[in-house]
Image (cartoon, rainbow, N blue to C red; front, side, top):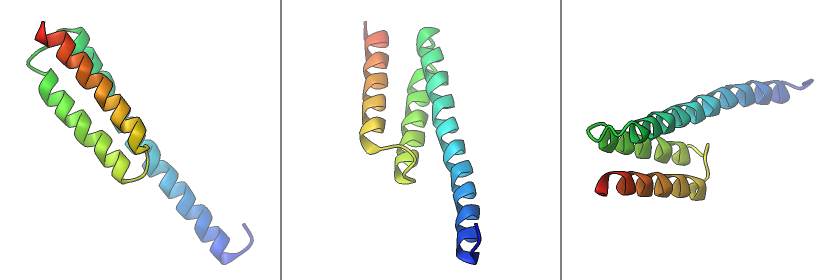
Length: 88
């Protein structure tokens, strides 16, 4: 980066990449927690974890880290999994 504006852009790019990585990591962590709770048949924890996951993934969509369709698909599949696991 040789120009002042290019240097600034490089800084911004690094900052944004870190923020995006943090958000993605947060969403993945909540997905793992939710899947673990479903596998462990922890019926008391699952609804609140699903709600928290939904909130996190929606926030990631708002920030442009995850695409809307991807978030919808993941949320839909996890919701279906939860209902199948605990409705029977």
